[in-house]
Image (cartoon, rainbow, N blue to C red):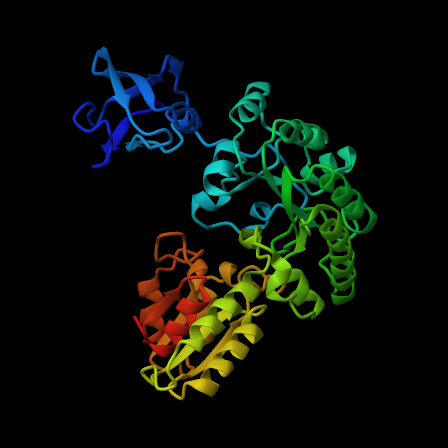
Length: 434
């Protein structure tokens, strides 16, 4: 891979100096090997860039504001291949996918650069000494770390990789270099829960504020687990016990550190049949990507928008909201609250059961087009169907099973409208506003 320029943005300070097809080699005498080198080395205000054009090389000098982007777009975002995962995690969701899905779904990335740039989680098991030192030297923050357990032997077992033993050792080194980390624990009953979970939280809390937030997420188990390790889902009772432990530990952290640090995902509360904590509990919502406080924030945004909505608002067209089993009661409550104020809100909420992955998978983001259409066909759907945006491939109108949005609309006979994960957007969609 190489840093071939594919586009120069109009506001780039290099407009007129470089062309598409030029290859960036060095910045201020330092070799550019990937996107992190490019972003870090180009931060300074006075730069000298060495580039290759055809068979020749040339140098361009540029003056800009410190931190101002150079405005270059490259053929390959990373300027390198994405690092794949070297683990065999006992709970790996990718290993639980059925055959026949698009190839990209089976790729397991474990790349520190993507963790910083896109928010993906890494296990630290495939980092070379150079890469660890570079993260420390550049203070690349935040990065997102899948911890799962602080006990070295247990972590190696969970990850299926002896390199997993070094997890806390590397994290302590990163913390010493003031690298900020968000962490997650995929909690598996009988493995890394109970006293092991308490130990992990205790050791991670010692790294605060560099470890600034930790989510506890229940293991997701599909029906496609042939020849995989036997794991048990959370029962309502055990989910409740885990919540009690995490919340109590979080209260201790709040008293000592000024932050709870540790948060259970919405999914764990739903599994326990517990009400979600109040809005203020989630502080600045640091773990939304792991489903921590997502429904409470959605509610707050929805009700805030409703306060500014006229009772006469809306088209009065009937609609259907299709979502996962877990969130359906919550969304139905929001819709009924809105309908009490706005007579023109006339809809119903349908919980789509996940036949494709198995009924233990109950979140909206893993519903396939096949399940959606099969369970909605024959119903009185009204004028449109609203679905969460995360049912679709990011930036595209394609479901997990490659059914397109257009195909779903043809099967259902009504428009299928993706709605972003935002309460205000949900209310506007219910009102029929475009």
